[in-house]
Image 1 (tube, rainbow, N blue to C red):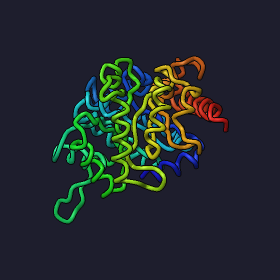
Image 2 (cartoon, rainbow, N blue to C red; image 1 turned 60 degrees about the vertical axis):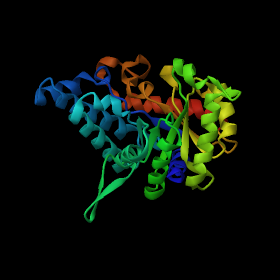
Image 3 (cartoon, one colour; image 1 turned 90 degrees about the vertical axis):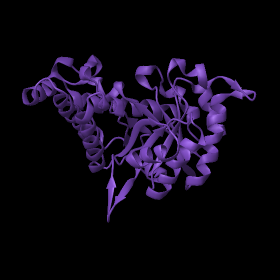
Image 4 (tube, rainbow, N blue to C red; image 1 turned 30 degrees about the vertical axis):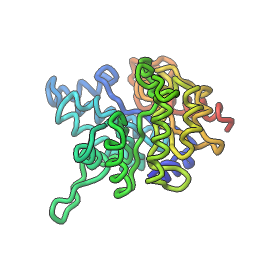
Length: 307
């Protein structure tokens, strides 16, 4: 699967993934009012509005980027209707030729970990039929339970040609409370990075592994260290834009070939219509503003990479 991701990055010349993380406050009034008129003030209304919100964004950016990353928590808070909107979003993005990274941050052990992996990346045989769950292309995985939690995901990746991104050094300010703790003479994130490189050997797909890593744009120095520790791991880089990361911070996340990383922006793109830089917010130019924000991000990152 990582080969497919690389092909998409090369085709679009954009090492960018758009985070489809809708919030009610991000949805233009015209979409929310329409949904409420049909379903009342309900979870069903929000779910419909979220899907229409995502669809309008995707319709305007699918030719510019290789991938999207819906965060499942934004949908789960509205129960079953929200999860239906999540699944509809995954399917629609696939129809538009996009790779979908499910930001689900799962982490458990044994059959439970396998079930999470099958739910998001694989399928389960029911009689003569393979029944798929959400069917993303990649999923984010929490490694806190060790290899017992990660290896079931790798097995599913190998069976279904999918991939994972393991949390190594996350972008949030308090990540250092655990991830920077010294163990065996080095920060814990370095130990996890070394494990990601080791785990990845069981799922190589060309020069890179289907086992990638999450390393936040807000920690460029750690990103440089981890790039050396994980030469075969693709790095998913959150924290660009709204969280403070910028293109010049990201150079060392990439390999000498200009590959090896894909940068996420969520609010900076999906809520760009509320920014006067991209037009009058009262006009609710959701798709047009998202497209302009993606183009700005692409220019920033590619400029920093000297291309």
